Image 1: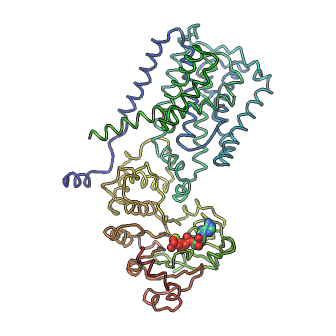
Image 2: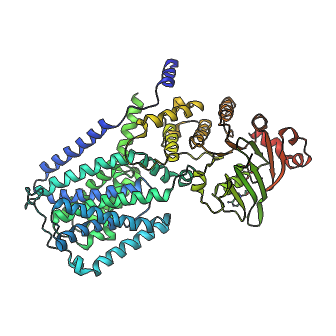
Image 3: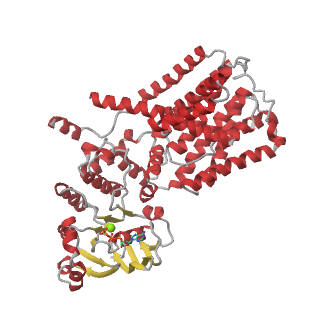
Length: 335
Length: 254
Ligand SMILES: Nc1ncnc2c1ncn2[C@@H]1O[C@H](COP(=O)(O)OP(=O)(O)OP(=O)(O)O)[C@@H](O)[C@H]1O
Ligand SMILES: [Mg+2]
């Protein structure tokens, strides 16, 4: 016991844990899940691709809500802006290369993130929530009215992406789109792992807990949160663009209050403040929705409601958060 | 020597009660001042006013000869006015090493960096090691704050303040809640502070005050009633009167 303490006292503080091993493990988990999905649902790759697009939206929401504590019910504004940016680039400007469409989605999402951040971050708590709801309705209405650009309530159709790298065409079975989605999700996921454990990620966690303390260290909560909102917009924009590329249409539902609220439900279901939590929540919610709505189209919402209540009451940290906690406690007890 | 920190005619009242009533003081680099006074005298309110956490009704605050009355709380910290909190405000899931590293990066304007993990930044961690070692927190460096004792959390508050390399340091009861066995660490950390740093310490523990301070300011009901040497403070009749009844409580509570 005594020797252990002395050793610890002399050991350098520098920690060797760069997290590289765990990063590779995380990447492996995503790729394995992707392969399993492909094998389990070869005829429903479109659903899996949509799940990944929405997972990007939920990850993006997790950045501002889970990591920074911002309350928002309007986060689809960022996703929809990315989707429309990619769609408009393709239809009106002839930018049909999938990678350039994703770039357009990133820019559109980041700009929407900047606008939403500037407005939403002026308030806290309930007023903040109300501002976010007002924003999503404004975005929705704006897209509806600007119908010469967006197709209004008919949606923006006629998006015809080029083959990926000029080689892989978007086939009827959605295989190209699926692989494209897996790669995009994996890249974004790894990027976010770096961000959330960087000094900036640590700063944001501090802001969530006690912004006054961060100010007393000379840090500006507003600037950090705004930066996170722009990053969040870029991530949601990737999801929106992916959706535009894979479905070849953008509808007003991508800019809706419903999608915003559902993405929050998915995040809470999986567990806030963890990237795997966001992905887990999305997969569970959307597969559940697909299965239950096929089995019972009239009462599926009731079942989703029941599931959510059960999770909130019995696993308040979300499905992933609770499992991770139990495993960590086991490991702690085993030591 | 010219003043590094100056407060002129600071006033603030809450609902008609003057909690800070025309307070003025001035400190030079290297000053070691204790601010004492009965509970509710307005000491913490004074700190909140000068740091910009609370809006004064009137008065002026100057750092390094420049008025900061219209400067926000964040920029006052960047100009070298740093405080600690009477009740610790720490991030429960973060470790002491992370707290101090965040303060160091914040000071250097690098806390917004989106890549890299400061646990693997040798320069930062070397400085973290020195600060944390000075306050005896080395063994706890990688434990989340919620698992460490309150007295040690207080020491971490001081380590964070020092990490910011302040020009003026305001310590709000740094020893409150610290077990007797650990107050020695606080004293040693205080004795080790840079010579040109101006320190104002609020403290109820009079032994600590007498060992630390070259000058004592007494605040009672929002007014400065004494500003002078530690040797004279206990003899002053107004100070005795202000402390009648409350001094015994305060010293035993500390
Ligand atoms: N925000 C506020 N609103 C109303 N009254 C306040 C507020 N902040 C402080 N007060 C009052 O101002 C007075 C001084 O409080 P303050 O915390 O500054 O005292 P203190 O000298 O630091 O006391 P202690 O030794 O107990 O820490 C108290 O009577 C307190 O109730
Ligand atoms: Mg106080």
